[in-house]
Amino acid sequence: MRIERVQLKRFKRFHDLIVEVPKGTRLVMLAGPNGCGKSSLFEAFLSRRYLLGGWGRNFDPTYFFKAGEPSAAKMDFNAAIMIQFDKPEPSDQQLRRKMFYIRSAYRNDSEFIVSSVSRQGRAVDEQRLGLMIQNDVAVNLNYQRLASQALEDLFENEDDQTTIGEFKRKLIGDVRSSMGRLFPDLMLNDLGSPLVTGTFRFDKGNSHHFEYKNLSGGEKAAFDLLLDVLVKRREFDDTVYCIDEPEAHMSTRLQAGLLDELVVNLPAGCQLWLATHSIGMMRRARDLAAQQADTVAFLDFSDLDFDKSQVVRPVRPTRSFWQRVLGVALDDLSALVAPSRIVICEGAPSSVPSKNSAHDARCYDTIFEPEFPDTRFLSGGNATDVQSDRLALADAIKAIASGCVVLRLVDRDDHGPQDVQIIQSRGINVLSRRHIECFLYDDEILEALYVSVGKGSEVAALLREKVDAVSASVARGNPADDIKSAAGQIYNSAKRRLGLTGVGNDQQSFARNILAPLVAQNTQTYQELRHCIFGT
Image (cartoon, rainbow, N blue to C red; front, side, top):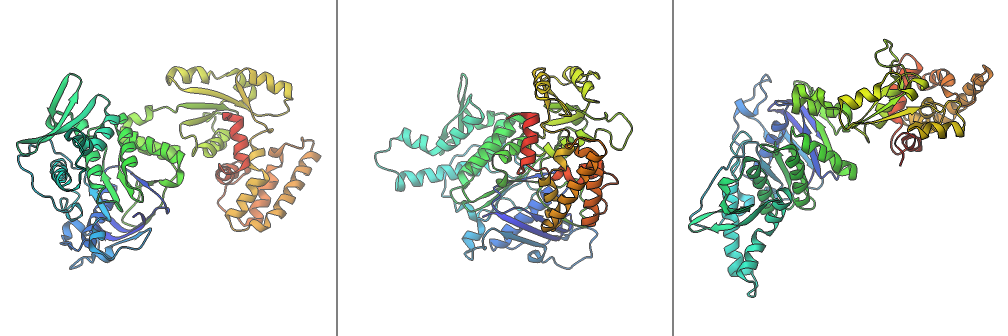
């Protein structure tokens, strides 16, 4: 079961909120500062679970109803919370009860000892968490469920040839393996004695068979979530799993590893929603998106006015998105986080006061942000300035940002093949075409422009005018490949033919705002430009 669309009306923080997620999405990452509405969305999911399960929902207007909205005697939860899944909702109530599994941000099961074991009911019938503001204690209950299931399996389901040691390893094998990948020096040993001093026992270094209560805060937090998913996935196998702030008490490295384990152990066909401020989890989710972009969605709740109707759709994890994420996670320290790679290109530096300062760098940033969010382009002057690093940018960057890779890039201009080889031998990359305008005003990109406004069939006329513009430029004494000199005429033709407004007052702003975003990864133009800068 996977969510594709949510609409909330007058619920919690929201006046009218629509959230859309592409079909097939397996992991949904909710980003945004405290108080932006992430937990309120999960509260809607929790309420929906109670309605689907036939338990009903008591209406507390001071909690569920959006403050400031016209009052109502009773909230209609079915009208306030509308969710569209990737398949029809089942009619069987037991199946409906497992459509959601939700953990709140308040998870603290610091210690427990069990002295008796009783038969546990179905996990899907559990009503442990009533509201997202409640403490969500699960480790103790999962221990009892494991111990109870062990007795049932031992006497009814297990092969008679299985030894006790084999049975114990099988009982905790998945949890032990998953925890071992997160904490290589920590091993889940056994369940202790469920009828006397029942609790999880661990080995670590020279310490053997110590109790769960002696784990660190981060170890307990990770163990709680992993244990919960591994125990519950037997029943919650067609489910939307939601975890609010899964990173609590954990280091950045551990957060990333935990996300891997949660995704790996998620049953097929299920969906995982995480509301997080975690840099580690966000970065790991970005890596997963790079491997399978259609399975991961990032929803940004930052800077949205929920007193008005809002539609939230997945955003690309661009640099501006990461800056907002870092701003939430690190506050003032986010400004100290440097990119991992900087490319110094041609163009007037941003320190030069002009509306078109750093034009090339701004175009490159727009083009390559989706694939290379850790790369930043800087304009370093003309070709001679960049080649000689006259502004000493490379040395300054390396001194300030340890480990940052610095590349230099110049236009092809009139350089011959031998000149290009000499420049490249000095570690400087060279464009395959005269300048960036040759890529921005490529026929493929102009066609994409026309397709984007629904006039793809009319692009031939513009391409003819592009030929005329280049011919006029050549007549003025410019080289035939000098698209920059013809760009003004092409820009005016495109604006006139498409009736475009608000797309920039000159060819440079038009190129930055309209054409650069169209140089997408699925175009040959992008691939050629990418090869010039980053190689293979």
